[in-house]
Image (cartoon, helix red, strand yellow):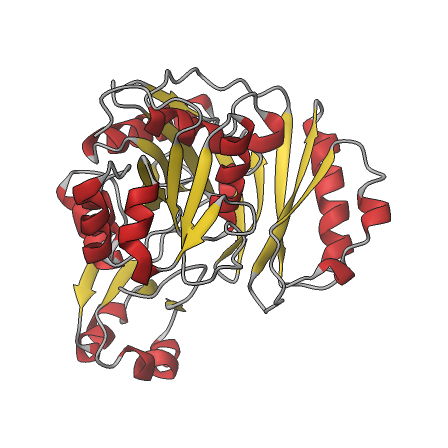
Length: 373
């Protein structure tokens, strides 16, 4: 654990080489920190901008080169994390990622700790499902391998289940009540070693095909719902004893009740707007938290929107039109291979007038996605 401030010119190790690591490195570079990436691909988005990169067969070298380590995704071998943690501070800790290793462990943890979650059952036998769904609609989620909508099935009838049941054979899966939510929201908060906590505004999230499509911040919800969302996020970051960042994704019901859908102990896609709309981005907040610095409440200067660029390469972007719009910022991740469902970048839109931000968001959305995703 960090007992003192980790000053600039120290080296921060980042486990995972995706766009979250890349954006964290930009903030580290601005503040004078060196960065090293641990990822199988030495040309991954983060490795492109880091001081050095190592693969998982070089963990010993990675450890020697770092003063501290953090991670930018959850699906990491726990044994590798324990080896790192045994030698240098790993923040958040491996104990947090053990909770996140499967959807079943995450949901069970939240329920056991008293956090609001939809009613669910963990199963490994598809024969039990028909009796569960005979009088209600559910979401079935594979316990492992789920990310950006993968391994997730909406079941509104027995025929829906029959069409996907073969994909659940020999799997552990969750059967969760389909919540009649009004909207999906998220809260990102940070916590340092002293226990100081900062919170970003609640954000509205819109998904398509299980992938975040766009975010609007601050969320258009009641003060009561905002207070409850903050309360849940702050209590969870304390319960998990996270030093770093936590994003909590929630379902908001018509009666202002909130259920946790899932959490992420790292920077989150729904917080990308903070790069251009806030004085302290989510990535700087993570760096401050793990390096032992004070966590100053972030100031958001304007309304903001974030639109993901999904499955679209630079040839599909009209930069002339995009860059002619005031308040528009393009963030590309350096990925060469364009694939369906792959996040290639995002666009932030900022402005004082929320309606103007929305107008630009939907104009850009139609420009990039002339038909549905």
